[in-house]
Image 1 (cartoon, one colour):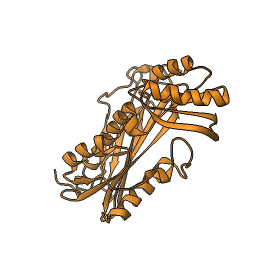
Image 2: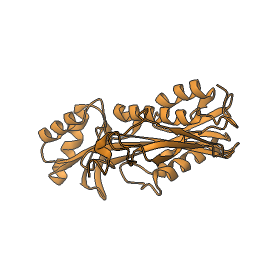
Image 3: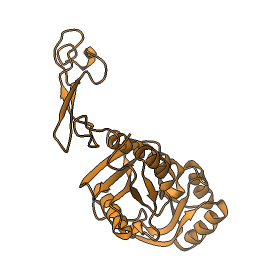
Image 4: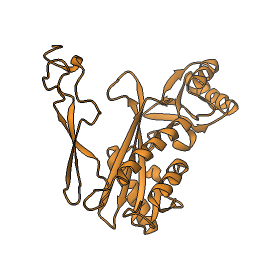
Amino acid sequence: MTTPFTGRSLVIATMHGKEKVILPAVEKRLGVRCQVPAGLNTDLFGTFTGEIPRAGNPLETARQKVMAALEKTGASLGIASEGSFGPHPAIPFVAADTELLLLTDRENGLEIAAQEISTDTNYGHKVCYSPEETETFARQVLFPSHALIVYGGSPSRKDLVTRGITDFHQLRHAAAAVLERHGEVIVETDMRAHLNPTRMAVIAKATEALLQKLTSLCPACHWPGFTPKEKIPGLPCGWCGTPTSLPLAVVTRCDKCGYVQENKFPSGATKSDPAFCDQCNP
């Protein structure tokens, strides 16, 4: 498949090894040559440990990263990602990893983003009061295959911070120093991609979601990003025929030429389960 990206050079704005999962898929699907800018410091746009707060939302931060990579290399095509961790938007008591990927094409004035929300994450932290408690928590969050951060004080005033801990000897040493000074130690997961295989897998899924958009071309002008933009409710109830809130059709619209395509019955079902009908199940 030929796209507006075929044969071009693409920069991946990362300093934490994300190219491991982004690069192979992007080169294969888009027909581009990828590079990672040497010396690019993406921590300038925010750190998980809070020393440098993220100034904007994930999309704005990803945009800052990719623009920095384009300026540094002189390229016109780039990808950046930004991760967020916290309660799941639909299940607040469950932790979630939200990974956003953004492609910017300055040559064509194009920006396309995609995201993956996953409950598959080891994200967590705990205040511990003994070495044993520290190690118990560490095992619960997949240590040592997933790195840890140890510090004392408070999240706003950290002391004796040790990042990227990947073995028990280092964990015991770092935790003992904090316990001796503070009587308690804060242990949290290190969410940097190169130290968190579970997060890296979610980034791979977000990459696939972005590539799906980038390779979905408008039938009229062959512009990328031809994906559903609107859902039209009204799938009829299977019992009484009353329109429900479930989608009857989806509308796909090209951002470049405005071509519109409406597809009925996007789920494959022509009738709704009565459980979703306000008449049959008020």
